[in-house]
Length: 185
Image 1 (tube, rainbow, N blue to C red):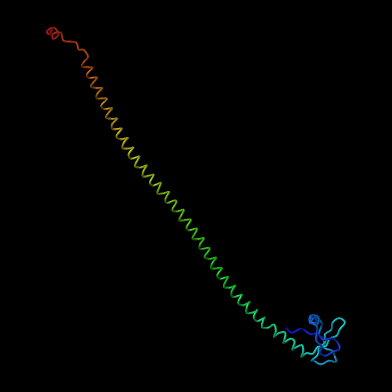
Image 2 (cartoon, one colour):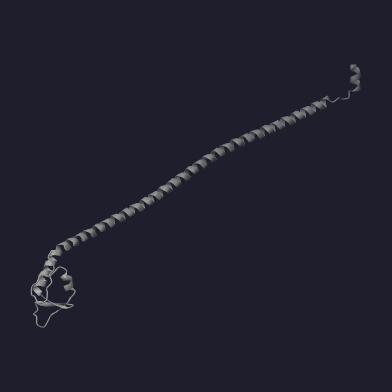
């Protein structure tokens, strides 16, 4: 790197000391009445500096030629970084979309699991209903048989009772007819 040089008052070409460039750049430029266009004066508090325009241009070109390749490389790196960021953002958006789809799939899976649970519950209820229907059908048949048996038993009881009453009536002593009773003795 070329060092910046400053010019001391009273000399044409002197080597500037490092750090004087910052001081000289903050100084105001003015063209004095006695100098031509190739020279400029810098005025600092308490000093007047005269600089050759050609020297300033060469120093500027040297400074630019020294930093320009690095700046171009930085510009290319920044462009590449920007492109990579765009690619990264696109990839991130795709991943977010996939993540949302996964959540939808999980929600759908949860719905299917819940539907399966309720389907199994419905199947169990249906099986219980069929079992209860079969039991009630058997109970109705049994109740009908018991009712029929009861009616038969009641009918038999009534018939037996009537026979017993008839038998008792027949066993009840009858007065004998006098002619039959005497003749038999």
